[in-house]
Image 1 (tube, helix red, strand yellow):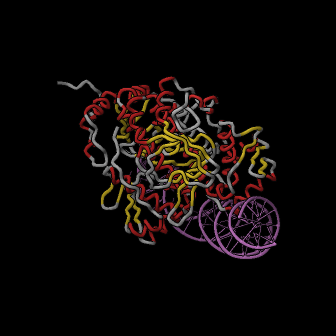
Image 2: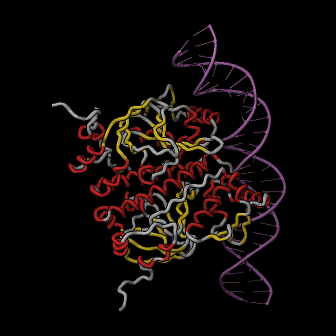
Image 3: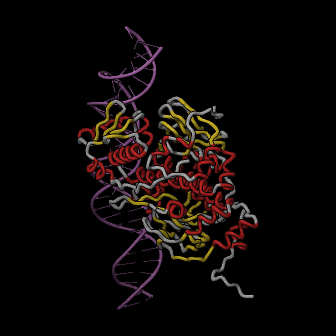
Length: 248
Length: 248
DNA sequence: CGGACTGTTGATCGGTATCAATGCTCGTGG
DNA sequence: CCACGAGCATTGATACCGATCAACAGTCCG
């Protein structure tokens, strides 16, 4: 019997669901999500997924790849707000507030599950546990931004970089994107600069320092943590409690 | 007939509801909120409302007063994440994630409406429009933190301070806490330092600069904006669209 | 092979931190 | 009513972190 949907990954057999980071959905939730998903979108590295001020009719979940959220001043200076990995919702602010004040760009070739955002109200109405899961994701996102804000306000360049590397590693690891304390880093140093609020020149110098201290090894798009303990101390890293999270 | 509740402000006659910033609730929502509210809490200036890592059974809405959310590094350096004003939810992260990674402290004598956070699930189950409103508030909070992150990463001290003053003024104004471009500022310069990520000494000097440029007048807990146009230009201020927001 | 982009290094500049002293305000108690 | 101390704000001198400017090296791709 032929399938009547146009995309490859069915929610029921979604590879992400097998990972222990994601809590299982019950039958009702899964049925709803399956109905809610209306397509799949694959974009190239560098493509804009959502544009500040622009209202697309879609809400997404990242199925595969890296993305990042960013926002710029009128003079063009860009701040990276956060990075997106598989399982992350993209466009929730837009769906809820009907307004988006940041841009989302793909870092790698990225595949997204597509939902119709005008259906979001029916999620709240018909499937409260799924609605709760969405709110959960929104709160978690805010928690991450809170942590970055603390970083920019209170850590110096070296501690900030150390923190960011630990953070990205741990997030990558949770979705199977890291092995042996090493993960694929599809960023340029300019991305890091814009996330850390320092210039590319200083980013290069700061990375060099971490190298010289033998704490990391960054080579050819691959970042490896060589001495986690010391790196954590440098970064004042508080490992967040790893909560199992819902996957929509 | 005597009232059988112990607190003064009934949701139906809540003074905040009369303000045009808040969208009216329908009968069902209002009835639910009224049941949901179980008390009122008044705390002195300086009191801790929520403590990082601590799980109180409560969720709050600010009824009157100023508060602030903050978070510190292991070495004690503190970052102010955002400020709270009437109508703001306090403890939503705790209620949803069952975990709170920041502290909330009262800046002034503050009165809060108290809700039981274990009832939050019933909100999602029984009153989807109220649940939606909560998610709306969470998204809005994230939007504000995003904007601060951009500020810390990309603005210099003068622009950062200018932005913060405009931001606080506009938020105060929305709840009737500002008149004639002037608002009561229950902060010390240390609060500003910790919000801006600069030292108290430099904060003092930066405030002085804004004074000398005749853009603001900060005297005796009162901050007045003297030349909004120039201040906005200095701050690269994009006035956010003022959305009417739900009040829970 | 050439060009665009990214990263590296050196020299110098400037914004913010740090250290230290003084002043101001206000609440408290003698 | 004044004296005192605590906390907050101001000012000056100096140090340092990170920005800026500039040149060059490495890598990738057409």
